[in-house]
Length: 144
Image (cartoon, rainbow, N blue to C red; front, side, top):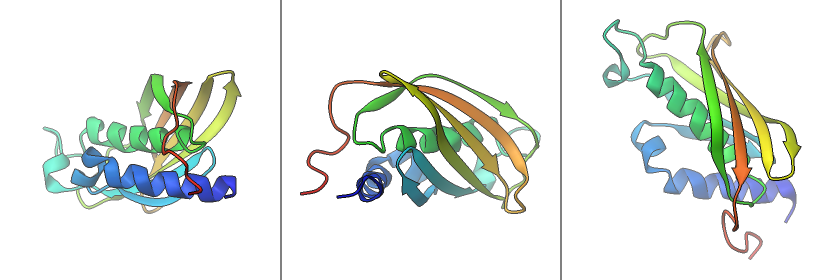
């Protein structure tokens, strides 16, 4: 299997096993080596006291894209550190897309940037994560 086929298979397996993402309606749009795109529509039960999307929901979307992307090489990886900057409030019904991209790798650590945009393409949040590889494969024998 090619690296892209392996990443695609890992993305589909992650989407199936990620119960939190499924409960929030997060959908896998695309997957590639070191890259992932997820989408979520802001629901009425996802708002804060200001009536806008709760930051934790946006964080979860971006963090999910990070998790899928950093495991896309079929080497187990976990978040070691991450932070988010919220740039714009988000209304109920807004479709958000989180794009995760590998920036740099050094040994077992890698830096990923996630951009969360609304349907108009406006950036609503920026998320940076540092992953750490741990022993094991994300899915055993992806080519078999």
